[in-house]
Every structure is written in structure tokens, then in C-alpha cells.
Image (cartoon, rainbow over all chains, first blue to last red):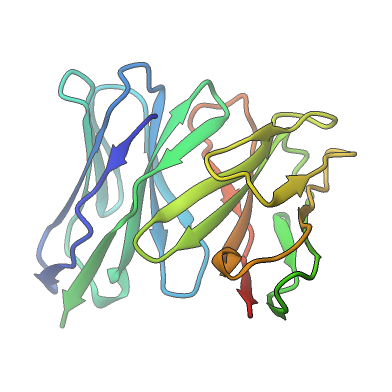
Length: 110
Length: 114
């Protein structure tokens, strides 16, 4: 069983702060890693993907991957109330099978 | 707009009845998936299809069946619904050749079995 673990939260941060979301995975053969954002009652939407060790930045979002320690994180700079959502970590195996964590709920307080 | 269409949006179903959840994509993605999402349990894979004509079982396949007659359509059938199948069901697709592209999700079907 391939496991993807996330703290369910909620994680509360003030507006303008950096939100840090973490995810660990169990299988060292994992190929790529994804962060999805899901608003209540909506479907998940892809924010970022990463497959190489290190950092990948896209606007206010930075994904960090450490394969040796088997964790991936998402940093959200200058957090806004509109960032309040559940963030799902997903791990890709064999180019076509994804395993999801149960998600971390983020609350950004004005 | 390209993407995945799911129908119906929501449904209340009597236990013991059958139902087919529809999923159609227009992106010519090879791989398609059905997930259910329950509070506290996240997204769990029901069935998947790597290409037209093939299907496979995911984590929670019991009580569900799928078919993949062509690239675009991937219906999910509940033969005899039970209350534990009350959930939100998401269909998704992926290119299958690009390790960065991730999934595209449909808008979901909220199913209540009573």
C-alpha cells in the first residue's frame, strides 16, 4: 500500500503570512508530486507539480521536494483569504496512477 | 471549454437500485479514473483505465463496475446501491505520458443512497 500522509489541520495563518503545508510519502519509487487545491463543494484543481529535488516556484507558491527524506511541501507566500481551502498532496507512480493524501485544511484569517 | 463532464450533478438513490454515473472527456487523454471522496478519508481510487478497452481495480472497487468502450467515455455503474456508497464521486483523466501534467477532474457527482 502506497501511503501519502498529511496533517489534516486546520492550519490557521494571518493574512500576509507564509503558509507551510507538508506531505510525506512511503514509496521511494514515486515519480512526481502534485499539490491540488480544493474549495468546499468543488473539485480539486492542480496548483503545482514537482519531480526533481529542490524548490520550484510559481508566483506565490513554492513546492519543495526532498526525495531522500520522502517529503514534499508547499509554501504559500503573502497568504490571502481566498487561499482558504483544503490542499491535497498527490504522488504519481508508473506515469498513470496517483495516490492522494487526505488533505490539509488551510484557513487564512483577514 | 475542454475538460471533463460528469452527470448527474447530484442524485438521491434508493438502496438496491442501480445507477450509472457518466463521465466524458474531450482532451483525448488515454487514462481515466473514478474516485470517491468521503470526509476524513480523502480521495480513494475505485477503478481506472489506462487506455480504451482496458480497465483495472483501484483501492475500493467492490460494488462498482466500469467500461471503456472508447477514449472519451468512462461510465461508473452501481449494480445494487447500498448506503455506504453515499459519497461524492469524481471522474478524472490524465495524459499518461507527461509526469508533470497531473489530473484533470470533473465537477463531481454527489450521490446519496437512502
